Image 1 (cartoon, helix red, strand yellow):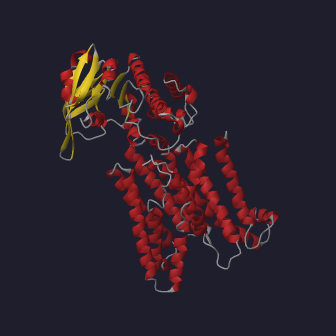
Image 2 (spheres, helix red, strand yellow):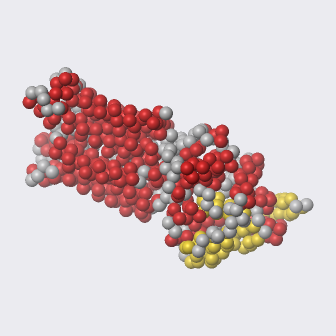
Image 3 (cartoon, helix red, strand yellow):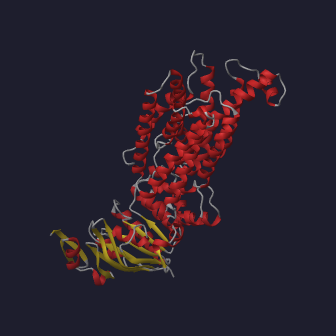
Length: 253
Length: 329
């Protein structure tokens, strides 16, 4: 069983503490959503956990191995990572971009072998990209491009997925579509950790919420237990109430 | 369909162009006499013209172009920028500087091989510096800026040397090297540059798959399993060796490393890895044709190949730069 286990992780940039003493676990079958305001340290926590950034203290392990000691290929086979979406360098074909998800399995663009080609095809079908497979990425809408990145992550067929704001700048319908895709990945046995800014959407999909504020994890548990008006006020510094299961935010504190 | 025929087509065109380069010149030679000369028949004068003048010159032009084309394509993939090129990263300039220094200080008088070795040394110093910088910085922009700095510094030192040139002959020699030319190249000179070009090309081809992954950006590429630091080091080293070899052979010839990959990219679905071989072939082909043009042009002073390449390449560079969308750094 592949688990990502982060224990007492701390990260600094110069003198500034980005993450302080954070611990959490991600296992297959879970959809964990990381919440917190801008600058809370969500992206830093993810980068530290994946071994992209040197830790000041603490540890992060994947399937029992220290992530900072894993080779990029070993890491990629166990965990698919979608950083915040950046424009692609070249106007590649959708099929090629999804194929890059198989990089850690040795896939070469234009010469996919049987199992790689099959995984890419499955991911393209799952993300409803069949009709776009031969389009170039510079001709896609934001929602389509987000699905391409999801497909790339799914194509790797890694047991875990970490995505940093996969629904950023998407309209409500496309946000739902992306989260539905990730939900079906989880119900098929994957484990996902997502950074989101939409609390309602997070509460609707997450099996567990991790709340971050000022570099620290201040709560970690199912939405029913951790989602309270006080916590929203504390973490986001907005006045909030929950009425009939709806979160209503009235303004900045 | 196009991509399947691209590489074989460019191979065929390159062979044709090199053959044409043996036919054409100040005095054109009929096809049957060139054929005869190739297989060792014909008279001695024909064999001399084909084997010691025209063929080595055409091959030198092709090799120089191929080395620059593949280096440009690989560096563009690495830096995710269509304007990256050995010239931009200061590799060509550094190689030219060491070559010019060897001329200036008269080291070439001791042994003719000093000159090519000096060029390769310069390229390797520049690439070693870039490789070192690449292990210490995550930023592509920083790497390009280091290249610009290297390039400007080498340019300044080169101007200084020309400024101080003791006599018009050494000045003429230096200019020859700076402008880039394949005139009077022999198989011996090709033989000395070939191991470096070949080694660089082999390194670039062996590590090209990572360039595809870099399309996603560095963090995502690392996320799909690419070892970023290794990729940077191998690509920079491969491009350095190939470029050093090309400068040793022909001096500094700019822009062909930008133009060829730019033309090739749409035919290989914009995949940097698949652009390497066709870019090398096209750049080689361009220089062979440009060199034929240089030779048959009726001018009192033969035009330098590097000048012709820049006359075509520099406007293309500006045009490509203007096509860049604002969203791409």
